[in-house]
Length: 406
Ligand SMILES: Nc1nc2c(ncn2[C@@H]2O[C@H](COP(=O)(O)OP(=O)(O)O)[C@@H](O)[C@H]2O)c(=O)[nH]1
Ligand SMILES: [Mg+2]
Image 1: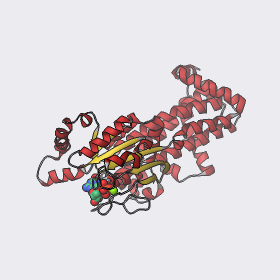
Image 2: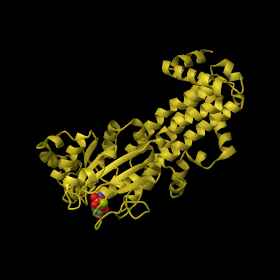
Image 3: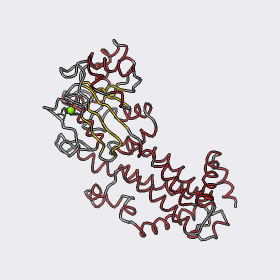
Image 4: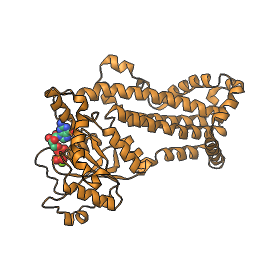
């Protein structure tokens, strides 16, 4: 039983308390109710509303950025119209196609004829947004600063965004300059005007590309958002946006990793009052729920995989899960768990001799089996997400066009 006691000591006090609480609930409400409770806890972000306000003059890259966040190309249904002719006279709202609770507001720029400062804050309901981005091009205008001041007054988190950094890099390359220092140079140029103003001096400014989201400070922008909105709202945006860069994949991975504990503690509680077979199946459904969430979050869809060359496809781990459903998937997971269990309980004599299929394994052992199982699959799916990104999304960048990489 050496392994058992070491397992127990590895659980934190908080986890033991949580498991105990869930175990009591299992006794009172039954294991299915607990699984539902765990799933609801994991899915709380889906109910969270997130409203993002976007303002700035025309042609500062707002529509392109909106499409990147929505995961849409220009001209796809539901996308923001990009380019000339779109003056965004009124507020246009865009619901995220993968999560209708996320809405982007394309606000008209301040100071235009239709939206003078005097009427802006009443006409444009900025206060309902959770977070605000003010786009600018060469310099931050007085109108932009005015808006930032108003947002500050109502304690609304915001940042300034200078997009199209890819163009600056391309220009530098063309001019035979060192493209590595471009971002710093652009920042310095802006900084000179920024330093003169009290508001901009204390504001965050991010230099990004809405067209090529793996260039520039998109990850830093996300981190700023993370610090300034609730963690559930951030979870919502992180799980809904496409895997638009390796940094975003990494952020998604970290967030997904933090959920493993919740599932493991839940599964442990469910197997604490074992009803042979039933508790195992309930736990397997929890695992399937989580695995599908990994696939959705990383956006490893069948159509993206289909477009990969055969030798790349063969390298993907996710294949074994994506191609199975129903009973076949349950059987596959049981087989995987048996493998994991054989490793996890190898020193645990009592558990070792009890057939896994009856799932009369102790709660701490279940905790570690589930934790190892999910960690392994999450790691594998992150690898897959990077392979898909490199082959499908990144490749699109080198196609000619104006198309959004998403
Ligand atoms: N190279 C490059 N072009 C961009 C980028 N963002 C926008 N554009 C282009 O700049 C023009 C204006 O962009 P748009 O998003 O419509 O700006 P908006 O008027 O502020 O909504 C369009 O032709 C876009 O394709 C970017 O990050 N890089
Ligand atoms: Mg626009």
